[in-house]
Amino acid sequence: MIVMENVQKAFGDHKVLRGVDLHIEKGTSMVIIGGSGTGKSVTLKCVLGLIQPDAGRILVDGKPAAAGDRDAFLARFGMLFQGAALFDSLPVWQNVAFRLLRGSLKRPQAEAREIAVEKLRRVGLKADVADKFPAELSGGMQKRVGLARAIAAEPEIIFFDEPTTGLDPIMAGVINDLIREIVVEMGATAMTITHDMSSVRAIADKVAMLHDGVIKWTGPVAGMDDSGDPYLDQFIHGRAEGPIEAVR
Image (cartoon, rainbow, N blue to C red; front, side, top):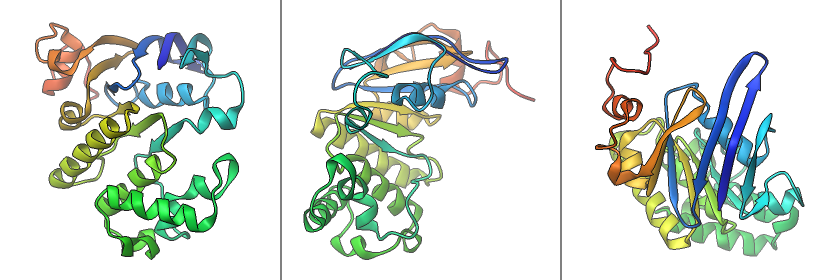
C-alpha cells in the first residue's frame, strides 16, 4: 500500500532522511520506532505530502503520492494526532464528524452526527459525550475522541502519531487494544510512530527501526528480540551503551 524508495529530506544543512526504504503491505500494521529527532514524523509527513522529499519516490497503492487530486488522495487517510488535536470550540460530535461536515466527504448534518455517535460508541464512549466540549473530558477520553475522528470517514490508511503519549499505563493499554481491534476490523493499513515499546508489541505486525535517516532494521514484531541488530537491541531494551549515542 505504501512504498518509499531512497527518500531523502534535508532542512538546510541538516539531513533528516538519508535514503529511507520502506514497504508497507496492504492491511498491515507497521510501527516505526527510533529516538527523538530521527525523522519519524518527517517520514509520515512526506507520505502525506505535507513535506516534499528532496529525492526518492513514494507510492501509495501503486501511484505517486504527489500526483492526482489532492483532496481525493487525503480522503484515503485517517490520522490520530499526538496531542489529540481537538478543536476546543466545537462539541465532541463535530470534532469526530469534522471531515463529514465539509469538503468532498460532506454528509447531511443529521447523518454526520449519527456516524459520529456510532464511532464514539466504537471507542467506548457513550452518546452523551457527543455534546460535551473537549475541555470537559479527561486526557484518555480526548484520545478516544481523536481515534473516533480518525476512523469516522472509513479510511483505507490510518496514521497514529505517538498514540499513548501522556496517558497512564492502564489507559495506554486500552488505547493500544482499541487501535489493534479497529485496524483489524476495518482491514486498514496502519502506520504508527512511537517510543512506547508496549504499544509496539500490542499494535505492530511489522516494525521498522529508523536511525540516522535510514531504516536500520525491519521485520515482524516477533523477530525484534532476536534480531541481532545492535541499534534495535539497544533501543528496545533502553540501554545507555551501544551504537546509538545518548545525549548527555
